[in-house]
Image (tube, rainbow, N blue to C red; front, side, top):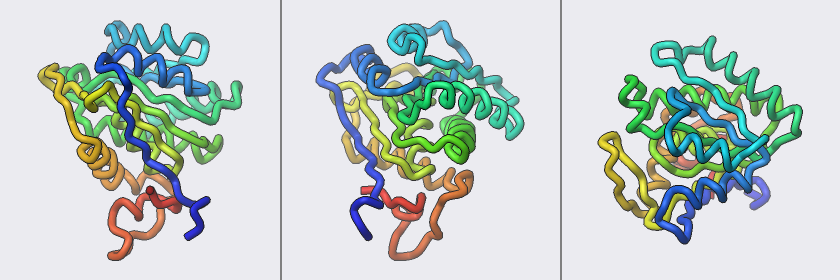
Length: 215
């Protein structure tokens, strides 16, 4: 396969072990930032909005109402925002799993909803790249969505590949562990994307995620 057809899943660590610097870096890189949240008053959400300025759009998550109808409404909102700015590089941010879990939203549910929204937008306004901060919850769901739709996907975490779990405990991870989280989540959500390729025994789940296999 020609190298031009290969999409890249890039897992990076920032020089800082704090969350703030990578939030700013991602906001600067993106043409637009979409934040999915049940709570927009957390410190992380406030910083994301400040860093993104007029490139920011928020989508409210309503526990118990993250269905197809709600995803379609969110996709329409995001489509209009991106279309008006001709934004093709999308930074995906939002609540971590420690916030979502309190409202009964699992990582898989977040993956499904965010992927449904972004896949629908991508059908009508093709994206070139998805950026994510790699945090549990919505950040991870954004990376999953990028892989599912088959575009270059960059995940930039604090130094040490730090993530915060449901108990709000920070823990370092390996590059391989973060990559596995993204690809496993994408393998579970790929049916939501219309551009997926047929799975084959030779390709395995990582290569069956879209028409652009991941390096």
